[in-house]
Image (cartoon, rainbow, N blue to C red; front, side, top):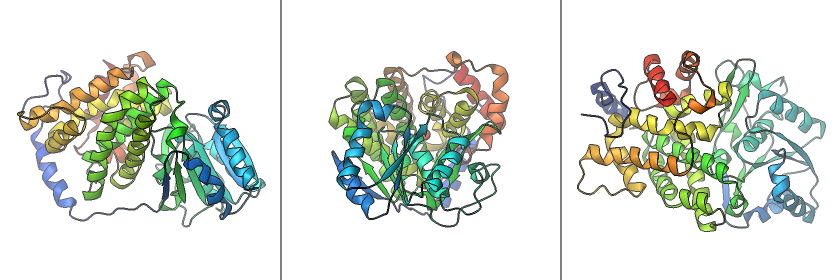
Length: 420
Ligand SMILES: [Fe+2]
């Protein structure tokens, strides 16, 4: 088979549509006979659902630790609203507003100490994915007796695991993108090892996720774009992942169609509440999907573009996703045909390959309309940086879940393509 008409001209070994991938697809189908699905988080979804926070947190204990970013929630007035909701129920709280967009081990370690000093009984994370991830990690480690640093618990170099639930944790997202409110991992940078890794456990799931679409209407355009394309990447990578299953397939394809219906509208008109609500649903579905099916090569690389070159997670995924689709097309022709249809592409009368290729052109168009760069060129990444990026990305769980087998040489070529 030939490449899609719009595919990059550089070729992977054996061509983009390699025979070994069709063999791999057969294996994957066999592996899919047994599967698991787990989601212990109670979800409260809807406009105005933030008002439920006081009643929900009251039964869990106090004081609560409120974890958020440094200024966005203060400036938007959401923090004042949270204070009024808690005051109404006479709930005491302490604020930890030290989270920056790319959180590191230090902000988590300080947060655990702060929670202990204030004898907090519950952790509430409110904000984007970074605030929720830091809150999740603080809650998970809050009761660990021998705790010294989260670095000891991160995948890769860390050797410690948690064996029970920590402090009760409530997640309140104010962006529609990461799905962190229903995911069992927190992604944290370790500056000593120059890596960005997950702290992952079934004991990290939020007790409750409160998802109020009205909290997302004031998001700036660039955040709507980067978090929205992150959601689409979760859904597409989760849909074609080796661990995808019956339930994640249903959720992923619904989430992809919600993104197709609403992301550009939410970007162009932030106050379009219907579009915002659909993106919140898509983000939720993306979080459930990635937790149960894993991800792929784009999420294998994007954390290291963040850790080594400071490229925001969503922007990195926006650059990577078209090339990831191109790389994986041969391994999942049927699924990419379904993705194209879910994104609203007309596929009647097309061959399977032509229909699958419509996913690539649709995603490239979305990335362009969102104003996301299409290459790494403007981020100062140099060709001599690619070897370290490829080596680190090869060790990622997401890379291992990619539907098409990924070698070091494949990763180097993949990275060269996004430099162009
Ligand atoms: Fe992501």
